[in-house]
Image (cartoon, rainbow over all chains, first blue to last red):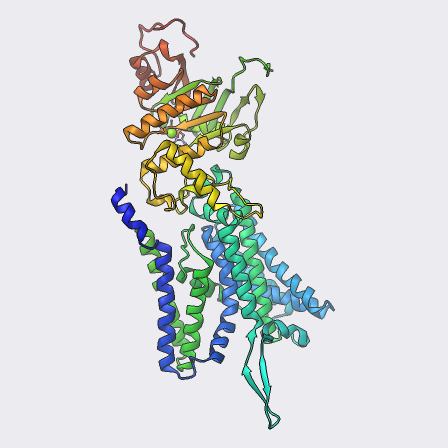
Length: 337
Length: 265
Ligand SMILES: Nc1ncnc2c1ncn2[C@@H]1O[C@H](COP(=O)(O)OP(=O)(O)OP(=O)(O)O)[C@@H](O)[C@H]1O
Ligand SMILES: [Mg+2]
C-alpha cells in the first residue's frame, strides 16, 4: 500500500540488498584498517595473497552454499563432502589414475553427494536441514571408513600443484646467486575462486536456471504454479553445492599434498556465515555471489588479522561466533522491514 | 466420445469431479462445462470449493476422481505446465507471485524470454511487461521494484497481465478484482468482455454480484463442495443466487425468470 510519492522517493535509495552489501564492504575495509594498525605485517602484498589463499576454500564452499540458501535451503554436508571427495581422489591416484582425472572423479563424487541431498529433499520431502545433516554424517563416515581414518600421503608432486602453484611469479636472480622473489605470484586457488565466482554470478543473474533458483526460494508454490520445475532446480542446486565442495576438497588436500579424511570439519558453518554476512537470507529468495565473496573475505581477514595480532584460537572462535550472530540479526531486521 | 469438429463442442467439460483432503470433501461430484466466448460465473460461500475446482483445471491440484475434457478430448492435467499446454491460464486467488522478484520477472516466471545465447533477455521482458501492465493500469510504475513493495492492486494487475499475456484459450479468474480500485476493476471488466469477444472461455470466481450480472453468460453455484445449480444469467436474479449460495436451494416459489431454464441439479 505504498503511496506513490513514497514509492518514488524509495526508488532513489539503494535497495535493501545493496545497503547490506555496502555495509559488508565497509566492514571489510574497517577490519583491514584496524588490523593494519595492530600488526605491521598485515598490510602487505604477501599477506594479502595469504588471505586470498586461505579464503579460497571457504569462498568456493560459499558459492554453492549461497545458491542453496537462495532456494530457501541449507547444506550442512559440505565440510564432510569436501573430505570424502578428497579421499575418493586420493584413492584413485593410489590406484594408478593420473592426478587430473582423479581430481575430476573426486569432484563428481561431491556432486553425487549433492545430488542425493537434492533427491532426498525434493522427492522424499525431508527438510534440507535434516537431509544434509544426515549426509554430513554419511559422507564423513564413508571418508573415515575408506581410509581407516588415516591420511593418504605420497600422492606425488603433481597432486600438490593445484593448491601450491602460482601464476605470474616473478623471481629475480641476484648478483650474489640467490634468487629474490619480486612478486610471489597469484596462487592457483585464488584464480580458481575468481573464475568460479564469476561463473556462479553469471549463472545466478543471467541464466534461466539462476532465475528459477530465486523463484523457488522466494515463493515455491508460486514458482510451481508458474511452471518452474522446482524439484529439478533444487536437485541441481544441491548437486552444484556438492560439486563445489568436491572442488574445494581438491584445493585443500592439494595444498596439504595429503588427503586428510578428517579435514573440513565445521567448514559448512564458515560457508553459511559467509553467505549470510554477504546478505543471503535464510528464508530464501535473497542473496548474491558478490555478497558472499565479501562475506568470505570478512571471515578470512578476521581470522588472519586476529592470528597476526596474536589472538588465541579460542578468542577467535568467540569473535567469529559473535559476528555470525550479528549478521543473522541484521538478516532478521531486514526481513521484518 | 465427443465430436471435436462440432462448433458445439464445449471448450472445457468437467465430469463428476471429486476432491478429498483426508476427511474433508472439498469438491463432491461437480460437473460443469464452458463454451468458447462464454463467461461462466462460479459462485459460492467461503470454503465452498470454488478454488479447488478451478485449481484442478489449472493442473495445480489433481482430482481424487473425475474426468476433465478439453475440446472434447480427455486431458490429464497433472501439472500447471500440462494445463498451459491446453491453453489454460489462471489468475490464482493467492496471486502466485514471487515477492523478491520484480514485475517482469514475475510476469515471465517459468517462461523467461532468452537471447540467442540462452541468457535472460531482461530488456525484452521489461519492454513486454511494461506494455502488458500499462494496458491494465496506465500509471503502473516501479516495474523494477520487488513486488513485495507494490500495492495489493498492483500485484493483482501483475497476476492478471501474466494470465492474458500468453494468449489463453481458457482463462480462470479466481477473484481477480478483490484488491482493485474502481477504475482498475472497470478495466478488468472491459478486458473480460474483450477476451470473451475473441472467443476465449472464462471461468470467473467472484463474490461481487454487480460484476457477475454484468459479465457472466451463465453462473454455477457451489455449496459445500457440490454444484447446486447452473443457470443462464437471465433466468435468475440476485435473490435466487443468494438463496443458492446460502441455503443450497432455490427459493420455494422459483421459476425461470427468462426464457428457459438451462440445467440444474
Ligand atoms: N490444500 C488443502 N488441504 C486441505 N484442505 C484444503 C486445501 N485446499 C482447500 N481445502 C479445503 O477445501 C475447502 C474448499 O476450499 P476452497 O479454497 O476451494 O474454497 P473457496 O470456495 O475458494 O472459498 P473462498 O471464497 O474463501 O476463496 C475448504 O474447506 C478448505 O479448507
Ligand atoms: Mg477461493
